[in-house]
Length: 248
Image (cartoon, rainbow, N blue to C red; front, side, top):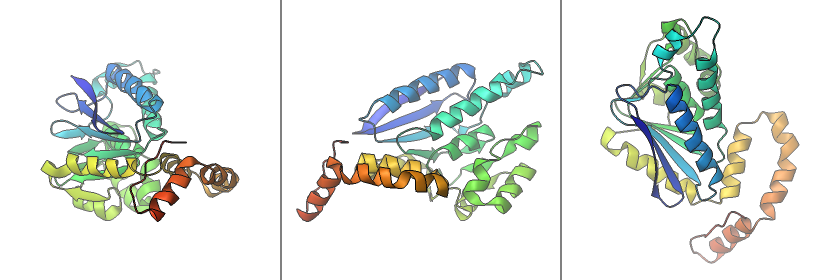
């Protein structure tokens, strides 16, 4: 029972939940994941990340045995899980969720905290908070797919299949299970090949509201326009060669 951190390709990290049978993130695994993510954040060689699960599920969210065993006024298992989701969302590099199976409750929130989601054909997505007398994904899910479809998921606690998730815009692609990880790594490699300062800025700005974007736009564009990576991108285009970016 662990979380695997690896580097399957240059500048790409792979994080695999291997916590049978459900890939639920209890307190010990949350600490392990938080420490691993902090190390990846600090390693500027990492420009994209893939997050997936091993086994039949992507992630079942929090460990309900820990939640059930807490004192009535102890919200730490819930707040700690929420903090981990915030850490995933705030990572410098883009994160691709390769949803290999069920994403349930907090597992759905984990997928939503990623920047891009792709799914295996047999994957399902369940906003199951109401099924256990709680709520989850009430912020991220409506922002991503709209209030109407989100409420249908949030209020019923019923799963949606991968085809429906694609129609909702919850995922951007659906692949045969055997191809999912390879496709996720290809996508991560494509992102990692782009100018990293621009990729990181685009990720930040996509998460801002219009007012925040307006305040930060000129300064960010000035930094990017003056960067070596911008000059390299233009030069490589004119010289018809692959760009080599050094994140400066």
